Length: 334
Length: 261
Image (cartoon, rainbow over all chains, first blue to last red; front, side):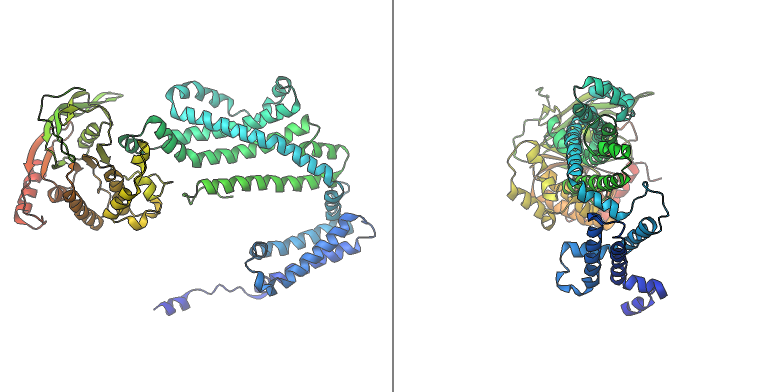
């Protein structure tokens, strides 16, 4: 009987303090963020700048938002509220982490300054240095986006040609085999004198860091297609172009996206290093500049900004992938 | 095109005759030639369903690939209605043991592949008709991974039939299915093949399947394949596995295959 089976199933009930934590996470989140707000308020004497005010009000707002969350039944279809509910334990703990960070830096002063600034000092950078930060983001994206797109197309077509044609494979495979493992950044000194500007040199570096993994994975994807698919299409009257366009390339797409993912990661690295070395703008330049001035709060601020920016770019790539490969329900997850 | 001095030309809209003359075939191997077919000759009349039986690996699948035009025999000639074949053609369609349905296409889009391959307008009415015939109309929007093995083979059959081929080449199409699914798809295939005149060559190593479906059974030796025996099947319809003549024929065929001692 079904009811018996149900009763026999083990109860997933935790006990004591753990069950309190699990069932009352909104309350815990409320108290942790309220502590952050309170703590920031009492730090105003020493930290009287916009970042502190921002932290006081935003954490206060968020703590009350968490407090009211269980009562906001009518908004349960809202995407933001769903997201917060899904990650509620993370949000609750995040409050404690920031509270701990504040205690250690702004109050106890256990960590040496200026290397470990307080959270309000880091937040303050976003408010006071907003213009320069957004300029840096824009400047980095102007290298990254065209370089990545160009490298993707180049890698895709070269890879498809290598995978499709034995002759092209014969000539290009050794080149890729030997030049591919070179880290793209190793080309920097050469790129700097070949290309007229540091901008074009940086774009070139992003192009090659994307093109190599995309080419290798596209080629392997195209050459891994089972001949049975070609046999079927050939008997149905398909031309070689039809076979390439409708069988080889679509079946290589899952591999192509793995290559794009790898290429994007590699181009982040090459972008930051290229900007640190030669550029006058961009996120890498900003880091270099902040370090030179000993402005460590700026360094942490730009680090957080970079992680948000880059993970957003990867999320966009995965959105595109899931849309293109909607027939596939497995593969790399992000 | 070379005209073979064989049987008379046939202009029937469905089903064509096939002439196989002294066909030999070998594969290049690291250690020399691997001969898989040796001087195989036989004729297939229009509308016949011929089962090719033989021990596994004997080269009967190779013969099917040669008739489909995917490979060219290293010796001998293959003709359709007396005209020597030259490469693959949508008139001669092959159905393989694995379905090879494109996983990114829905079943309907997979069945439409033949129209697209030849740049023809997609005949949606015909596709729906064929999908209905194989019992997959309600799955036309599904992806191949959502189909069972038997359904995938039905879809493969539909992908071939929608192009109105004259000759159907079946290479162990039901080989990987469980026995119940196989029985039901065999029955459906029987109905299908009676509703239209197709010349069919069926490679199988299932003697009962051959006896249920074929009008003629050709038995091959182990590799390199040569013809041992040629049975014309005149069983009373509908054929039944327990029928006395069926059992007797089964015995004779197994004997020809060398499996009765």
